[in-house]
Image (tube, rainbow, N blue to C red; front, side, top):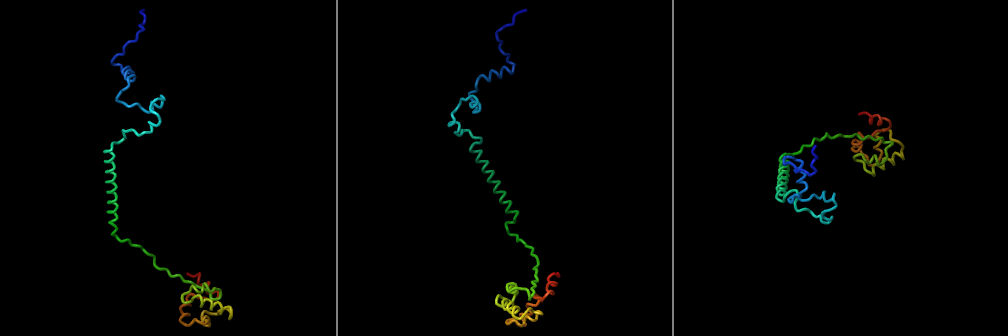
Length: 178
């Protein structure tokens, strides 16, 4: 048997692995060295040089201006579209309102204080205090018409107050009824 030849053979040109090994050993002068490669090897630029921005940006200045112009055009179009959809603010807004509700405010003449009485239309602070003072001096009112004994309450004022005044338990029954 012949002895194997100990000299390395030249790779065949059609062998792709051999071609890659040859090209990997020779650095390409047109490619920039990777910062990751430098970091792994511990070589390369210092940290001060690495912090400087690279002159080659992701987009050229002209590309950045084109993108900015497209964004401005889209923003302007969306604003115009929004105004057009709102009909330029000319359409009136109708507000549906609930019908006015009238609350019945009922007071018992024999238990109400002057503050509650002053809330009624036609009775103020002074007349409310007069009603309470009369009730304390002459006793409880037997009917709503007995309110005429208070100085300052005439027939017109009494007619305005009658729907809001009660005497005794009859007022509690009227308040609970709808």
